[in-house]
Image (cartoon, rainbow, N blue to C red; front, side, top):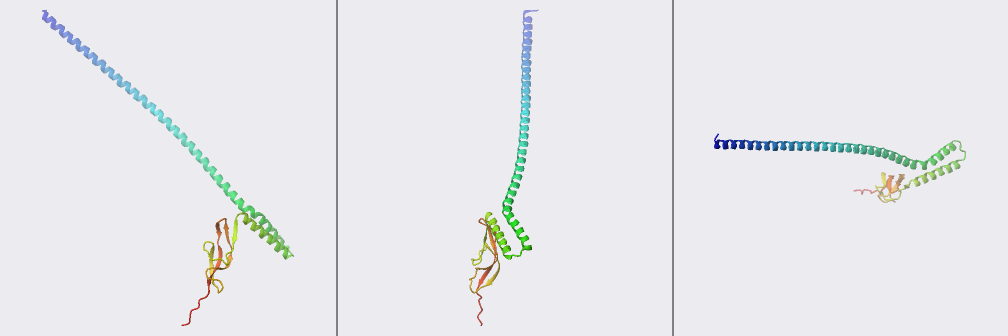
Length: 206
């Protein structure tokens, strides 16, 4: 083998070695890239699992809060029903209690009336009942008012009829069928009245 041929052979061997080294570097780089991708996938999978666990924990917490709020609302509703029932009972009690003694005295008066020989004592008993009844109404702030002689007021009176009068001007209450009642400042029942229509106007003869 000549020197030139020997040199060419060495060059070829060097080129092969260089190519092999380059190929090895490429394979190493590619393997490293694959490992990096795989590591990144693992990290993404771990992050996704952590998110799922976190979301499941939040859902569980929200469910617990929802159940607790529903239980609290149900307890509140039950307490409200009981409070309303108690308020209604107390209201009825405050209304009924003042009239119990009136009713008892009325029953006693009815028994006396069956066998009473003294009419004056019966009248006295009825007056006592009337007085107790008035006191019971006062305790409830219920006031009775009369309308006779007053100007007709549709906010307090209810006209059941009209009547001509030579002495009482038009629009004035001349008679009262039943008294009116107020509770505090509010009207319970208007007075049933007859209102004056004034003097009769006679038509002139033509």
